[in-house]
Image (cartoon, rainbow, N blue to C red; front, side, top):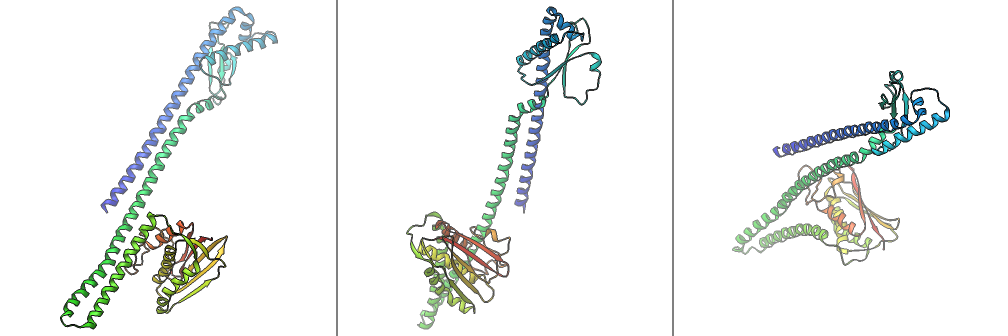
Amino acid sequence: MKKVKKEGYLVIATIVVLIALVAIQVTWISNAVRLEEQSFNHNVVMALNGAKEGISKHTKTCNSMQRFLCGRACPKTDQTQTLARLDSIIHTNLLDFGIDLKYKFEIVNSKELEQNRLFSPKCYQKSLNGLLELNGIHLRIEFPDRNKFLTARMMGMFVISIVLILLVMISFFITLRLFRKEKELSLRLTDFVNNMVHEFQTPLSNIGFATNLIRKKQKNNDLKKLDEYTGIIITEKEKMQRNVEEILKISCAEKHELSDNEPLNIHQLIEVNRARFEPKVVNAKGKLIMNLKADNDLVVGHRSHLSNVFSNLFDNALKYNSGQPEIKVTTSVVQNKLQISFQDNGIGISPKNLPFIFDKYYRVSTGDVHTVKGFGLGLTYVKHVLEQHDGKIEVKSNLGKGTTFVISLPLK
């Protein structure tokens, strides 16, 4: 419980740190935008100062410039030339300070400046007092794309910052998810070890018990009892051997690619396993229904491993059944693949357990962990073998109504 609390505190602390980093990053970007705006405003002011000096030189040598700037009547050609000259002066000075934006300028007097321009774009103005005969004349300039320009200057840095923040957050959640998976795997491994100890402990106890009885009966030469006790030893030894083989089976299948592949008749492999399990089904007052109708059942694969796949599915159909088992095996050809269906009327699998049944060491809870024997490796092994044969397995199940496993294997 304390460990869980520590993990929860660690997650909360990490999330708080991430939020703090995001807040710091947003604040930093906001300050950077403000500094960029201040730099732009300063450059505009410097450019207007330069423009004022340029206009001063022209007003000393050009009367038409004086008349135009003071708002006096002058020929239309002089107006056009003066506007062009002013535009050239302003444009040159803006370029000198690295401002290459579309702009609008106008010459206004003090009365026009008093008009309400609250909802207009940000304007920059420069008094032309001292250059002209008339005071109160200002040069006013606007940049329609000013905000876009400032945003574009910061966009690269902003995007990089956001991407880095997102990467850190994604990395954290991926790490958290992996941690939870490892924790779940650790719990399953613990259950696996407990099950394995239980599965080996019982045969060892029975072997020890039978051995002690043999020692006692040796003196009496009771051959019938000796035969009974040695039978117990052999049975329990075989049980232990099966457990060892089951563990080694999944280990070997995962570490090595399956070799020694050969053409196989799947119907034949299924029939071999049917013959093995039919007595158990009959003993449980159940029935096996074989519907092997596929017109082509030839695949290339590993005989032993594919046989183990079918054996596992037959075994599960029997183990996870609380009544009279009914197992139906059907084959068909679908899109040049052999499809094999194992359908049973067992206890079924709940929706919450269904996504995990192929995970290593995962066992569906049945109340008592030892009610159904096994290590949670069977279906992991089945899926791994089928994937190495370029096949796949799917499962459908309703709790209390049974389970259907559908295998697909490429035909030869």
